[in-house]
Image (tube, rainbow, N blue to C red; front, side, top):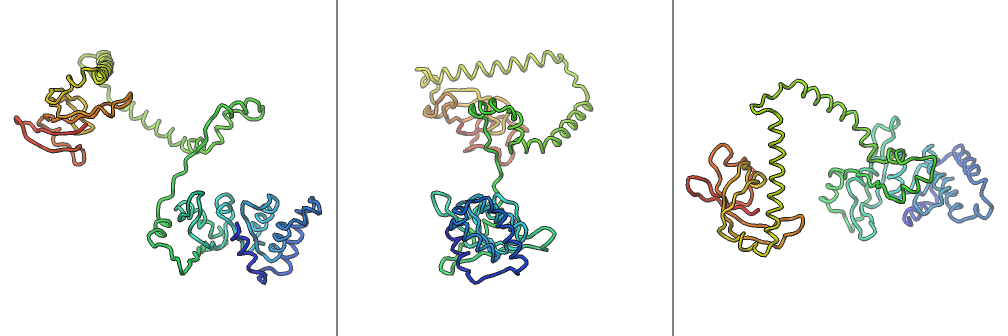
Length: 343
């Protein structure tokens, strides 16, 4: 903020307006300040801003009075402010393009440290250069201190990196619901519909409807599945299989937490592994022997870790596709592949 004001005040002899535009600015300023008291009009900030506006210069930052910022924004939109010294807030929140954008520095203080601008921040500010329908192209200038030149790699990353995706931080809280309940003019549905996340979903709604319609057409065009045992039997099998997996998982967890866990799950114990697709790309159950166990990560959501050697079947499932294996040290055994894996 101080730099914006010092840059503007450092040009006392610069005058970019003719008499006609000066008169237009004078009338606008007087009309804007007519409701203020004499004491308010005499404020140093207002007097300095009026003097700068009379020469086609302007300052815009968060420390200005609201009426002062509004005057600067309106005159800039009308093209009467030829040079504007502004902070990042002006580029982020106000849609007012300019012919050229000048960066006095590529670093900013984010509250904890001085860092280089992010790609999204640079793009947002540099994107103001170029007025639609007026300029064939916009110009962006970066001032560099000869004693402290920016790193080329950092500048390239700042300009070329992909912008950070926008994510809505809107959250429905109890206090907000109570406040909306008191207001007869706005409902919860109206408030949620105005949020950024809901707006993004609304824009994608036609795509979702199109995809649903296409999927429905594909489903209708499919030939009916002929099952030898009948569809109810398949449904019962899937339900029973899901229940079996749940009972087995609960049984294993009780064994993990029992006093006899170290005796049951000891090195050399033969086990059947039924969920190796995530590690080895194998869908069928396989036999294996435990090598070592670690019960430290055991919690309500995490099972213990153990290392085992597993006998893998021969056939089209093995070897797995490239990139589909886990931590592996291959061996051979009994006409089948042996795989040592940590799971």
